[in-house]
Length: 232
Image (cartoon, rainbow, N blue to C red):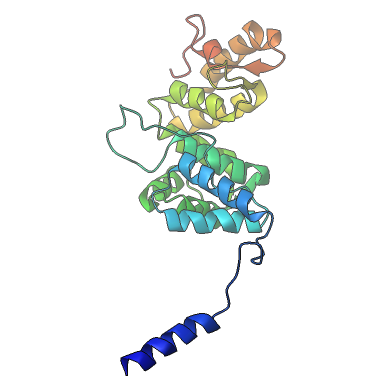
């Protein structure tokens, strides 16, 4: 009986088709797709790898920007708890959503969910901005960045670092017109900064720095000792 079983087992193995590596067709683009995916996962360090992987390949399939950090982001020593927000995460969202300008709050929420940003963080931003329905992405971003900053000056510094085309460690320049929109929006949200003071800040920067910098501004301009403080 044992001999019969052994014969049957051997026969089963013999009957199974045997494929060599040359016979198995591998899509030529697959190795590079998997390589890029692995690199993206290492840089982004998602908290939920499966959920992030689904968002990554869904974005690629839809021709959208995938949720990938530009570089590995080490946690700040000053950040005692993980809030789910970071400059790297916000840069991902900005790359994905800024081309649309104005978009639905639900779409922003979906992208935040893909990146596992805690719902309470999202809800807090929505409450501060009184957002509903269609949302201007720049407004949402400004509040999100402010949650990582100490004050308006620090917020605008981080916005420059996030939006700049300069390499890391350089001046972090952005167009002055773009900077003004963020400053005015944040100042209006603050509620304690008068229009006259905003005008004083903007006039100083425009006449002292921007005119000599081809319409650009960077953080060293508005933290200069001679510049009026951004907050009153």
